[in-house]
Image 1: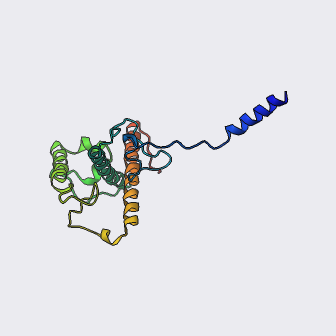
Image 2: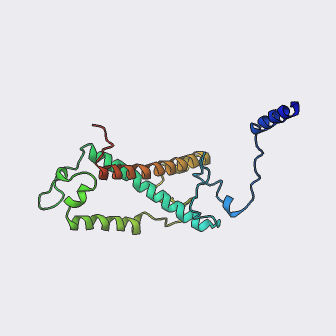
Image 3: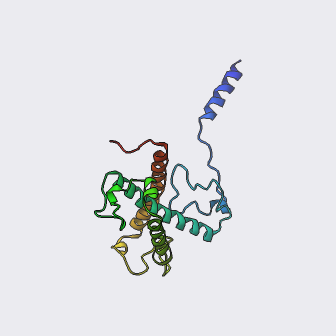
Length: 196
């Protein structure tokens, strides 16, 4: 009987003992564990296995797209909240007299603005995509669009601060992508996220 009690005590003590950490192998699965944006508690999160083969060019392309969509989403959230707050441009949006004030916020704007107006917006976005928002000179990192033209003091930061600011931008972009998605879903559901 005493040995059974002793065995159960040992077993319960072992259950709370720290486990040995597994030795990481240098496989393609661990190729991006130390990249910018790898955050606790998830670590490197690739549930679809898009970069499971360790292809650096594929990872850089996906990171570029993530940064670009994050920047667009940050602008979208600010624009949505600004329009929701009632701040509009003065004047008319077209020659027929439709004022900026009369254009509703969110998806309602798509039915109010004429097809030619929507085409102008799409053409402007296309122009930005083709001519402006691209890396011409091969910047320091993926998503560096300074192109040896605009600096805003970036080169005055030390390497650790630059890495921190890049991580902040990446995380804020991720949050903004979820934020604009939530604003659009709630608008379609008829539930406002904006307090009155």
